[in-house]
Length: 127
Image (cartoon, rainbow, N blue to C red; front, side, top):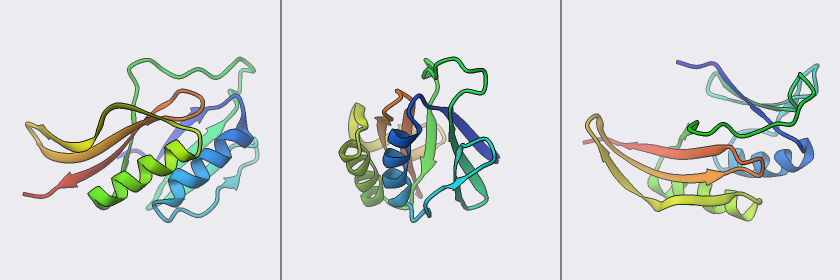
């Protein structure tokens, strides 16, 4: 559905170190640097961009927002969260595990990146 997600950062070098690790768990190549200096991670037709805010103000994390990243297995969900914590992120909410929703079950884990953005590693569980 979405082609890209853009997240603001106050420290691009720190963000690159974090996202190189967590996106690397998915097999994503190191990012491109676009004409505005944004990091662009590409995967399966979508892009995650990390940039300083164009208006010159400080980047802030949005309260109530979550960026979900689809992973291939529960093991990959664990590896993704562990890699994120090792790279400077913070594990948040419940431990990785199975969650049931009216639409089905997923296996997921949550992190905050170094700028405070909430990320979810999620693997749909087929019935």
